[in-house]
Length: 394
Ligand SMILES: *Cc1c(COP(=O)(O)O)cnc(C)c1O
Image (cartoon, rainbow, N blue to C red):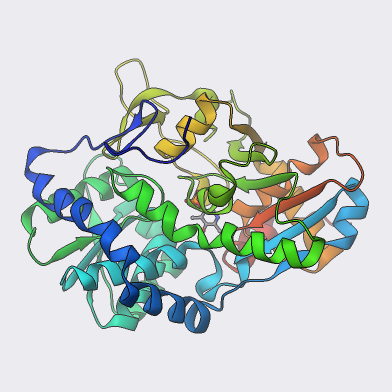
C-alpha cells in the first residue's frame, strides 16, 4: 500500500486529471516535465537558496513548554508562521515559479479566494520580474481589500470574476479559461494540493520541506526523528501534506488533519469536507467535496478564509478513506479560544487557520512524554480584526 501518487496520477481511487480537452496540451507539458525539473541540480540549488535566504528557512521547531504542561504532552510547534509573507504558502509559490521559468513561461496566472495565495503568487512574480494576473471573485475583492491592495502594490493585475456566486470557484473557471486561451506562454500556479494531476503531487513535494526539517530538528532535539503525532489544519491540504509527507510510510506516527467546522459540522455553516462531502470531481480531480444532490458545489463556511474550501485534495481524500490520517474538526469558537490561549501562554499569535489545529488539543488524551508536533501554518496579523472583534474582556 502506498500513500504516494501512482504513475497515472491517482491516490487509490482519488486524483487524476478531469479537464476539458482543450487543456490537455498544457497539463501534459507540465506532467511530462515536472519530475525532471524538480530533480535537476539547477532547480534544487535555486530552490534551496531562495528558501534559505528569501523565505527564511529552516523555520524553527519550538518546544512549547507551557502548552506542553497544560496538555500533558511534549508539544513542538513547527513555525511556518515565520516564513516570509507570514505562512507556508510561499514554499509552494517559490517552487512553482522556478518550474515556470524552467518551462520558459513568461506570464503567470492564479486564482485566489481570500487573497493569500494571490499575495504569495504576486510576491514571487515581483521577485522574478514575471507578469502576474490573479483572478478573484468580485465578492471576494470587496471582502479582502487589504490583500487586493498588497497584490496591486506587488505589481499584479487583479481581474474580477463576475459570474455565478462571484467567489473562488468562479475565479477558478476564469483562470482555466485564460489558460486554455494562452497555452504557449502562460503558467497556471495552483495554491494547494488540489487541481488535476500533477499539481497535487508537485505541491506536496514542494511543501515536503516542512516534514524534512521536522525530522532533522526532532533528531537533534529529542534523539528520535519521529514524533508520536503530527497535527495540521486542512483547507485544500498543502500545509498538512508538507507536514505529513516524510511520515506517510511511518505508521507509528499518528497523522491528525483538522477541518473547519464553522458554526458546527451539521449547522449548514461549515467546511468539514470529510464529514459532509461525497466523492465527486472538483477543480479537475476526483476527490471528496461538499455537493448537493445534483452535484452542485455547496458554499463552505469558516471564520478562517484559508479553510473556507468545499473540497480536500485527493491525497487527503485517500488518507481519510484508508484511515491513515484521522480527521477531526474545530468550530469557529474553538479556534478563537485556541488562538487566544496560544497568544497568552506562549506569546505567539497564530493565523486563524492554524488555530484550528491547536483547537483539538483539549479533545485529546495524551500520555506523558508523548511527542506531538503541531504545524503552525501561519501568523495572525491578517486576522487581527477578527481577534479584536471577538475578544471578551477578562
Ligand atoms: C491558506 C492557508 C491554509 C490552508 O491551506 P492548505 O492548503 O490547507 O494548507 C492554512 N493556514 C494558513 C495560514 C493559510 O494561509
